[in-house]
Length: 100
Image (cartoon, rainbow, N blue to C red; front, top):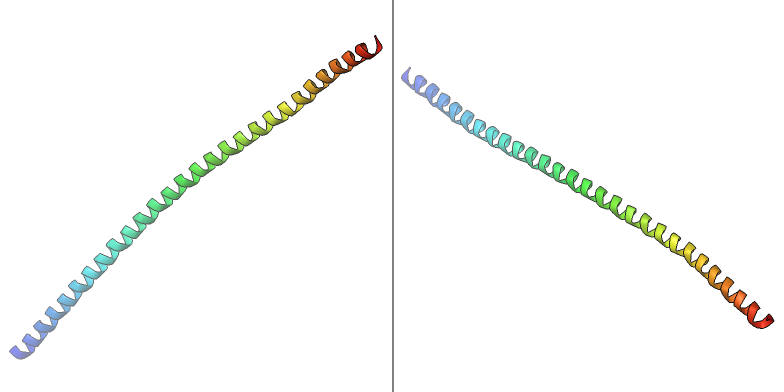
């Protein structure tokens, strides 16, 4: 009977040791999973911040490009008006010079 009790006790001890090792492995896997989850959340936040920053830069660049195009259009129109005024004065001067 004592041999049977000793075997049972040994088996119980082995089961307890195996259960403790399994618990430690599960605990380690849980810690790793939580670490991966936290890291993924941080990376998601970083990507959101980067996306927002790029959106702001895109808006600023498109606004600057639009303002630049407007200024070019304004100067193109003013060059035409300036050329027409100068051409008018040259034409009047030519008429006055040749016909008077």
